[in-house]
Structure formats: structure tokens, C-alpha cells
Length: 346
Image (cartoon, rainbow, N blue to C red; front, side, top):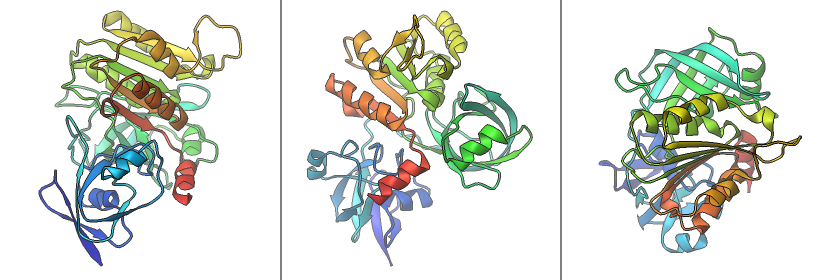
């Protein structure tokens, strides 16, 4: 038995089956519903409940505070309707409405970025083109393994302008079957399945204020796409790119961003080491603290943050505490499948 849910930004109601969340039903029926982690931790699918009642599965209080819940806000990824309902997603400026694609791709290159990250490039063979907004991600299936979410690192291809191949940065995660396959077995020429795009932490192209781009580890992938796209579009505002890693061996693409910095006077690139094993002349400490040490005024800025959940949450909380509006913080926390399962079991 299903119930009917009306989403104010969508012309037709959707059917939500018993036990299904609003977000699950929306994605299955082709709605470009803003979302990120799909596990109640990032707040990207935060919505206002106008009518009806929903049951909320466990979620992080960072993603939805008690005060917000009392004001009638819900997370679509955790909201299971009791009956017919009406919602609207919170999206103050723009929504990415690219068509969902099922692609067959061919691996064109597998390069070593660091001791635990591979850069994988995929040529689209069928099902394309994949149009997306910089900062979005796709579900990528290697071999016979279930698909996993990885962010595109390339500039979106727009009418032949941009990168014709897809680029992903995949970190080897302990216990992760897909990342282990990429680290040890993936070779050029293999067929890969890609479905997307997804995600709401994308570049707001109409924004004219300062951009704070904060990446941790392989979170550099969507941040790279955002920064390079902004530069290609001719966005002239200050762009501050901070890349936080543990040690020297975890840095990658430094020369690439230094070259971009040399060509674009509005770009500043700052790598930060949190746990250097040897004396270093580089910036040290937590990357989000470096941002607040350097930037005195966040007025008019937007922040794009991607990487480990702990870093993303700490950076978001610190920036909000310094006066940056929550709606101007676009965060993409990279949860492992084990972390998602742990959240669902709470």
C-alpha cells in the first residue's frame, strides 16, 4: 500500500510505498531531490513538512537540530510518511536538474595519486552524455561489485567545453571491496558502470561572493571540479582552496594547483598537514582552523567542504559559529559503507 506525497517543487505527486522514505521514492521516480549522504548525517535533503506526518529514522543532530525539527523541518532521507503528505526541499538559490544517466564506460587510465588514492579516468561508451554540476557524484560499479558513490573530479563537459572523460579519486578503505579492487586489480580497458549525477553540494554559478573550498583527502575530487569549473567560467571572486591531509605522502596534485594559482590571481591554494611525521615548512594543524585563522570576514561567502565526516562536521560547525549561514555551507561527507551501516543501526 502506498501513500501520496506532494513535493512543491515538482509538478506531479509521488507514490511512497510502506516503509519507504520520501527520498528513496523521489529518486526512484526521477525527482532531482537535493541530497547527499542518504543516511541522515549531512542535512542536504532537509525539507519543510507542510502537511501530513512522517516517522523519522535515526539521524545526526548536526544534520537536523531539535530546534529545526520543532519548526517543522525533516530529512527526506529519513522521513517515512504515515499517510498523504506535502513537503518542499530547502534550496535557497538553485537546484541541479540534470537527467539521470546509466552509462557504460571504459577505463582509460589508472594513475597513482598517493599511497592509498588512485586517479581513475573513464571514457563514456554508451548512455551519455553525463551532464552534471561541479561537485556532484555518481554511483560507480567496478567488475561484479555493487556500485559505490564517488565524486567526479573533472570539469563538466558542456557542449564540447570541458573534460570529455570522467575522473574519480578513489581511496583504498580498509574492508572496502570496491576500493580494494581499484587499488589492486583495476586496469585500463575494463568496463565500468556509472549512474548519476547525484548530490546537492554543487557549485552555485550565480554566486559572486568569495568561495571557500575545503578538501580533506580524496575529498579533493569534488573540490577540484568546483574550483576548476569556477575558473573556467570566469568567476572573478576570491577563491580560497584549502587541502587538508595528514602527512606529506598524502598530498597530491600540488603542482597542478600551483600552476592554476599562477594563472589565476583570484585563486589561493593552501595545503595543511595535520600529523606531519617530520619537521616541515608547510602549514600544520587542522584544515578548518587554518581557514578561520586566514579569513576574517565571511560576509557573502559560500563554503564547499568535502572529505572525512569528522572534518566536514567540524569545519561546518566552526564556519557557522563564525557567522557563515548554514545555507551557504555546502558539505559532502565521505561516509564508508561501514559508517552508513552503523548509522542505520542506531
